[in-house]
Image (cartoon, helix red, strand yellow):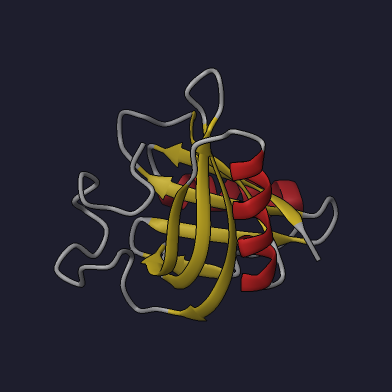
Length: 142
């Protein structure tokens, strides 16, 4: 199973959760302070909402969720062979999950990640002292 991920900045998480729950007819799979994600079955989509007042309506980042670390490592090799600069994060904590991932940047500056979730986490990023408020140290800050 692979699915595209769309991570959006939202001004008000409660309003965004209500809207996207209605739009996709599904509740959030994970809901934390300042963060929500939806595992939408049809169309296959991982929708991530990051509360960033003043930045609402903009893309935070894009991604592709894959089944395993092996696929992430295959993508690291493939993207490197294609001449793209990769930023690898293996065993990192991001968005309330421990993940293996690789980042690339598109020609317009858009950030893409290919990732797999290894386990849930109680913290947003690698440093528990920065639960979600400090976007400068957050894992998916754009």
